Image 1 (cartoon, rainbow, N blue to C red):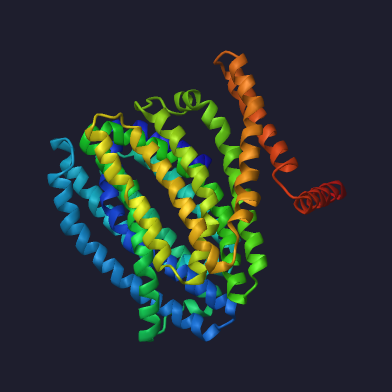
Image 2: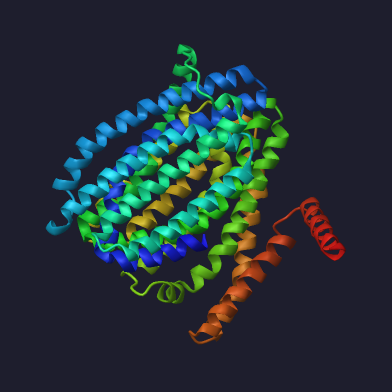
Length: 487
C-alpha cells in the first residue's frame, strides 16, 4: 500500500498531469473489455473452490483445465476487440492532444498485452486462493510492489518518451508476476498441470455461470471505466488525472481489505459446499464487519485530512481530486459490506436473477451520470450517483439472497449494518472535535491520525465485536505478549 502511494506520486510528477490522464483513460479502453474476463474469473474461483470443498479431486483437475481453455479463448477475443473497437474509440472519440497520439497508441498495445497475460494467470491465482496459500500470494504481491517501485527509478533514468517507457515496463512486470504464479502452482498443485480434456456439460455450466456474471461485471466496468471516459468527453484528460489519483489512493487502501477478504472468501464457499449454513452465515457477518472496521481505520484519517495528505503527497494536485477521493472512499466502505453477499451468491451457483437485478441497477449509473453532466452538474456528481446506486444494489442483494442460503434480513441488519453504523458514528466524534479545535498544521495531521486510529480501534473492540470475538482477540494478544517475554 505504501509503495503504491509513493509510486503514484512519482509517476504523476514524471509523466505530468496530461500524460498520466492519457495512460489511465487509454488503458481504460482495454479494461472495458475486461468484464469478459472478470466474469470468467468469478466462475473459475467458484468452481475450483467448490471442488476443493466437496473433496472432488478428479473434478478439480477437469475444472482447472477447462478454465485454462476458456481463458485462452477470452484472450483471443480481447485482442480482437482491442485492435478494432479500442483503436477506433481512441482515435475518434477521445480528447487526446495530437502530438501524444503515437504514445497513446503504444499505451493501448501494452494494455492489450498486459490484459491477455492477466487473463491467462487467472486460473493460477484462483488455485492459490482456493488452497488458501496466502503466504505465497503475499510474497508474490510484495515482489510485484517492489518491481513497481523499480519502475519509478527506471522511468526517471530513461530519456525516451516516458509514457511509452512506463507502459512497456508495466507490461514486463505483469509478465514476470504471471510466471511466478504459474510456477508456484506447477510445483505445489497437481491439478494446475494442464491436461487436454473436454467436458461439454462442464464447459456449458461454467460459461453459463460466467455469462450471467458477465452482466454484473459489465455494469462494474461501465460505472468505472465508462465514467472515466465520460469525464474525458466532458472535461478532458486533466479531470481523468484527478480521478486517477483518487483511484490510486482508494485502490491502495481497498486492496489492504480485499486481501483480508480473500482469506475468508474460500471458506464461505467451502462451508456452503459442505452444507454448513450456520457457519457460513457467521463467516459472512464477520467478513463484512471486520472488513469495514479495517477499511474505516485506514480511511477516517484520510477523510479528515484529504487536503493536507494530497498536498504533501503530490507536488501537483489535480483539481477535483479531494472531492472525488472522499466520495469514492465512502462508496468503498459501502461496497466492503457487500462482498460476503456476492461470494455467498456465487457459492450457490444460482446467479441468473441475482446478476440480472443488481447488474441492471448498477448499469443505470452511466446513463444517469450522463444526464446529470448534460444538465451542467459538476464532475463529482457522477460519484454521488455511484454511491446512491450501490446502496440500492445492496438492498436488492439482501432480498434475493435470503431464500438462497436461508439467511434472514433482520440478522444481516442487526449483525452488520447496525454494528458498523454505531462504530462509524461513535468513532467520528473525538477526531472531529480535535480536527475542529486545531489549526491546519503538521501537528494537527499527526494528532488527528493518532486519535482516529485509537478511536476506531477502541469503539470497534468494545461495541463492534461480540463477547466471544473479544475473548478470542484478548487470548491471542496475551499469547503474543507471553512469547515476546520468553524471547
